[in-house]
Amino acid sequence: MSFTFTTRLPLSRQAVDRDHLTRGLPDLFDQLWADAATRVLPVWHGKILLAPHDAASTDPASTDPANTGVHLALLPPTSLHNAGLRVYLGRSLPADLPEAAGTRIVAVQLDDDAAARLEPEESRWVGLRTVATVLDDRDAGLFAEALGVLNWHASHGHCPRCGAATLVEEGGWVRRCPVDNSQVFPRTDPAVIVLITDADDRILLGSNAMWENNRYSLLAGFVEPGEALETAVIREMFEESGLRVTDPAYVGSQPWPFPASVMCGFTARLADDQAAHELLPDGAEILALRWFSRKDLLDAGEWMLLPGPSSIAHAMIERWLGAPLPAATELIRP
Image (cartoon, rainbow, N blue to C red):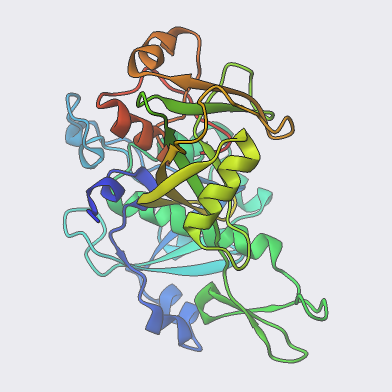
């Protein structure tokens, strides 16, 4: 299996040593706040600030995120007062960024007052899907990491066994119940997303009930307990489309911290004993299904909304198409 496809996915890029051994230091954040080289990534309602744009470092003809001049605002700890929940993200690896290689980075969850003091102009706070494709490898990975773990904290403040408020430990990577000392670790929910082809090499796209009726993407669904990824492909595709598929083949994965998923991309083909026209959308999640040839897809660019460039669906469809997708906007689901 080639790693080439995964490296093309905006949120699968990484240039950070997560430095897991350092998380266990009992006075970790005291040490980090005493170190003038430490940098803080402020997060407010899932959004971050960008550093001031450096026009001198921007190549207007470049499609490489490293040359866009768009970077996260990584601040000294002294710039934040009354910091909220903190998570140690690790050490920066690149040597060609303003932060030296080895710089330790902490995500900090800000409340409304702290965010307003830091930057009162709300339009300067941006979401991950807005900037995923223009950030470099380090910053894209940092944002995805921070958002994923902070989303976990937001929904796991109490012990699942007894309901007691849990304590944050291990640099923000563990929550411990004070009653029985049991530990709760960050979770990620695996989902499969599938590019189905028929005998004519058309792909199947569906329109979700949560979207506009002209918005289409690949079919996807969560993996259930006790289920292999390949089995989930077959089950989910039948549940959503009424079609039996075969030969599921893994192509790559991407974290999708909205709030806590990892999207596992697969291809599959329509079973030989089933006709392509036997489509049966489930009517609850999927309202419409259509087969598209490459020409159909390109011709539909004027009326159909396609997956946004931060999604794995976008990359998977382009891989099949062999060309850039028509102008696309972001999806609620990848």
